[in-house]
Amino acid sequence: SMADELFGFNDLALQLQHILHIPKVIVVAGDVDVSEWGKKELGRVGARILKQVVQEGDVVAVTGGSTIVSVAEHVTPSSHFRDVQFVPARGGLGEKVEMQANTIASSLAAKSGGTYHLLHVPDRLSPDVVQSLLGEAQIAEVMQLLHKTRVVIHGIGDGMAMAMRRKYTEEELEVLRELGAVGEAFGYYFNAAGETIYKMPTIGLSLEDVKRADVVLSLGGGSSKAKAIMAFAKQACQTVLITDEGAARAILEEH
Ligand code: BG6
Image 1 (tube, rainbow, N blue to C red):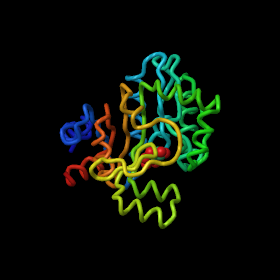
Image 2 (cartoon, rainbow, N blue to C red; image 1 turned 45 degrees about the vertical axis):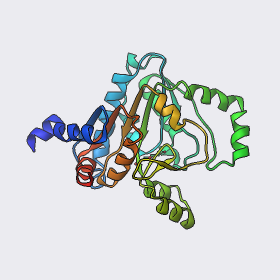
Image 3 (cartoon, rainbow, N blue to C red; image 1 turned 135 degrees about the vertical axis):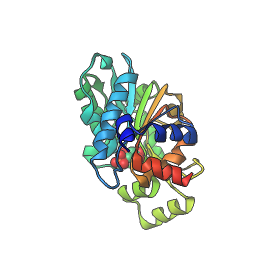
Image 4 (cartoon, rainbow, N blue to C red; image 1 turned 120 degrees about the vertical axis):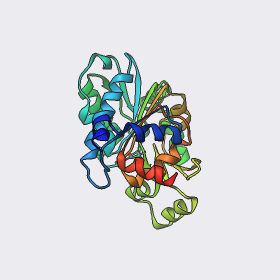
């Protein structure tokens, strides 16, 4: 309705706050599954909220993905970003360079006037490689910063869609399917009950670090992400969820 368009789907947002137990939900118009245009709106709102929550000297952990790319595109310079350090949340999650957390951290810094760090880690590490990488000075420095994360800004993905995007083998996909992987965030896969069923073997921000952060901004739109959004909400760590009408209505139907 006209009122919804004007007031940003406030009623839908309130219902989601109640169902998902997230303090603040913002619902933008559209469904990114139907039209990519809605991603601009998610990014615009994401950039606005980010500016509201950052404080001088913050460490902000950022993930990859097209939604967070859109946030970076909408950030503008502001004194709010003084001495803010953008750090990629986790390394090696199999994204194209344009959508990698490293790339987004550097563009967020360029757009906002903050600074950035990079976490250069290959995909899929064996346990001994994890240990030796953590011993590298450059990586240890970034890990130290990540443990000081005050703000997290991240995307949410459909579990199977993310596994396919990461080019898992048929066998691996089958395992995830059987485990009921409906949601994904920063390399963790969740079942419908919100339990972690698989964690990508890489380094960076852990779910415990996310839970310790003061502010967790989650972004994800599209009706296909409804189950993923519901699953991740069970982790009970989000401060703000920015989603779209498509996802919001699908969540209400699922509920
Ligand atoms: C990835 C993150 O880069 O982006 C994932 O590592 C996230 O955790 C995904 O689920 C979301 O991507 P998009 O393109 O749907 O915003």
